[in-house]
Image (tube, rainbow, N blue to C red):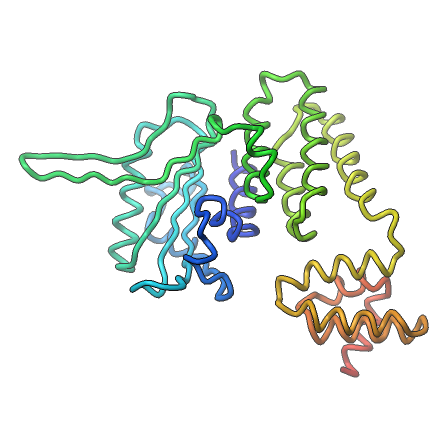
Length: 314
């Protein structure tokens, strides 16, 4: 469970924009994606610490500040809980999170429960309490992975749909033969590569797929990971080195909003001689991206020392 918790926390941050687009068809008009997101998980831990036990069960929880495009509110908070087992106290916990977050921020909150358990009848949607004429009813968005259509998830181009599909495959692991589970993972990897998804996101999704869905056989898990890597590599095997690097960097550059400028710099660098080409290429990456020296050296196929030498001149 701890491994899966870490994977969920990571993937929610990596593709949070896709999470919003998955649940809100009009997300582009509701939220200002250009302003980015602020993750307040540390604050959430302070609002809801373990009850006197450092080793108490922790939950996959995310609290994200999201800017709005219109309306009276400049921003709102998105609270996400990923619940992997049946817990009768879960609605109570969701309500406790809600009123503590509200007490601190006094801002609109939308809450999501992503239910990844295998208990079909466990579907909490609200917390209710009434006493002598006083009552409260707190409803939250509840999404049961087990109930989702695999066909619809497979057809979706949204990266979060593929996360849900991988989670459902993991839920069915005990009921499927190992060879069938093996085939499903390979098919999912191939579908990811066929989608129009930025390469860096595909990398994050592949990591989630590899480690979240395990076969239960160490040798087969290793073999499957190698085959998935082979599937990924085959997608770029027909490209020249320069074409592959240009493709990768252009995809990653989209996230920084510098695609056009970077593309011009890359094309100029690739047109020069070997040394001049590498020099111009590295200079452009240093100036217009936030990649580390190691990442630039890997992308340009040069030594770290070469990158650092150019960096000093720049």
